[in-house]
Image (tube, rainbow, N blue to C red; front, side):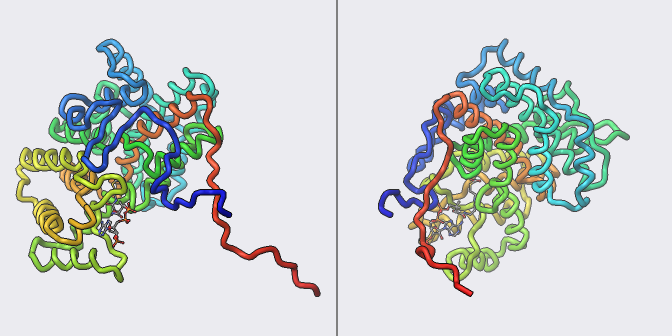
Length: 391
Ligand code: CMC
């Protein structure tokens, strides 16, 4: 019928009003609550950015200390949750475990679940951002057969995550400050990106009145796809496949990406909204250079391939015409790999970071009080009415 606008992929439909994040895709601008991402990356940190996204303003020193302390005090997860992990195969992809355990949190935290109360929403948000690194690190420990590490609340958010990933009960784990800073930066650069597929999924689930843990697990499921958060894992797999930085090898992958009969796309390239450089990719590239040079790995072969690939693509007519630039995920995987994080954890780390964005959007929607259930319509293309065949 002609009653509804047909807009597959939401190319031209605003599904909501929002005051959290602004993107000007043509000019490569990303603002969180008005602050440019490059300034935040240079001067802020992940807990402060989380406060900003959730509450709308930068915290005072007292507000920051109080918020950070509260997040630290919620990092532990219910002991029963470890049984949940044990039901999975040891080689389960960590994203499949995350889809389950995060949804399962609702079964553990029955208190403070009245989403109409601001205080309950705040507590759920804090629980989620505090527990996500713990749950994520538990996936890795389960995969490699090591004991789960309890969080250490004397450490900051990024340090604690590294400790739970790489520490073990038999020895003291020395936190490398270069890794901790890079980890914090990665968390910040993935924290929010307005109405992307996973955030829209969280809002749609939330519009039904579903509890926040269920909504975030829906977001995790949507994030997993290679066109979205799964891209960081796919970039590293692609660099592995390319193998070395010989011109022929790289060109062969560029040619495949341009071939319309081949479904292959250059992973870490292109974005629905940015038709100019992704401002997060710029910061990510700088961070990558810094981390690798501080680690004495400036000659990392994968970094070389990535840089040459970027250079060739940016000079190629196909990519120029379509305004395809490297996105946030093009360089993040190289940093994560240098830190020692296995490839199958990359998208989980994206989920840990994006939880603050998801929950801030969920909170904005619920607190607005006048949201409607999300209920898209369709253009029906099936049979018109017909009769069930008589005997
Ligand atoms: N390699 C080769 N061609 C591409 C690529 C690519 N990475 N991205 C887009 N194109 C082509 C596409 O084939 C189309 O060509 P044509 O006009 O000839 O049909 C044109 O560029 C426009 O692309 P599109 O697919 O219509 O753009 P979209 O907005 O629907 O998709 C995207 C955006 C991010 C899904 C897509 O660019 C892509 O799949 N990129 C690779 C995966 C990736 O890196 N994703 C991470 C996105 S950033 C982090 C996040 O959001 O999670």
